[in-house]
Image (cartoon, rainbow, N blue to C red; front, side, top):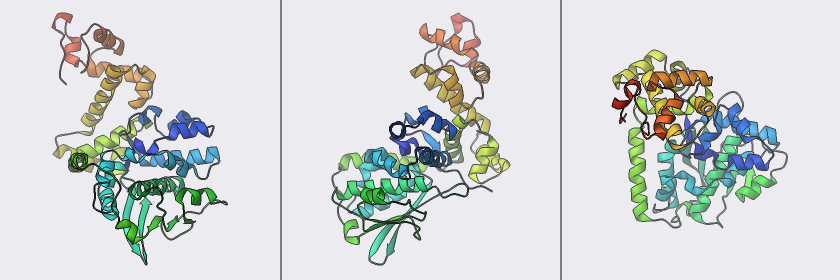
Length: 360
């Protein structure tokens, strides 16, 4: 049985389109080949399948011939891309406590990472491992992860801080000059672990900057997110959002990624008053409402983002859900009758004089 498919926020790929263009790559084509839609990077909170992200980075490294692609992407990622978590880290008493806070909430940012603090002799290692797929270790994803951790530590400790050493399990390139320049220390490949070795005295330091009021607000937001993610329905919704653009979002696929069979998934959802179909259609209705009410996305792109193989299949689904065609809905919206939220099937099918807006 396959393991649960982790979800990562699209903020993980911050700077990817610009880096790809700089290296002469076709970013939209690479994203689509990995089962991701280019528009999924517009919102940093969009959930992405970690497996697809790993495949994307490896493909980009091969296509560009840059063995340091993951590090180059890490260099473009900002500390603020951690969202509310970035506000919390700077308010902890020590850098070690900040790291412990980061590790506690990490699955909300990147559920494909397993991180921990490990004492090793006279150093403490921020050790990280990835949930990997296939036979090849995701070297670029690992270098992106440790590269971004290096940036986080630099933000907390100041621009002059340097690690003791950096370690990777995978084999390194012929020249590691760029890796050592990025980390500012000795970089070892084919090591027994992936991690950044730090001095205990550094971790005992107080983080730079911070705002206590904003940090308290951020903690409430993150604690609420941790509490809400526990239900099966919430997890399935996240998986549906991540898998839809790839066109393979089925109950069987979601169950496989959760590490259960379809019957178990059905039973767990039923206990919460849900079905897979109701969640899938709910996600699609929410997405199409956003597409039509807040933008001018071509129907072909809307169809792809919602997981439909063709525009005609999308058009048929839309009519069954809302009782009219997309063009009809847009005409009603222009006339002030079909504006967000979307009209329901019942109201769309009703005579014009009785048609009204709904709240669902």
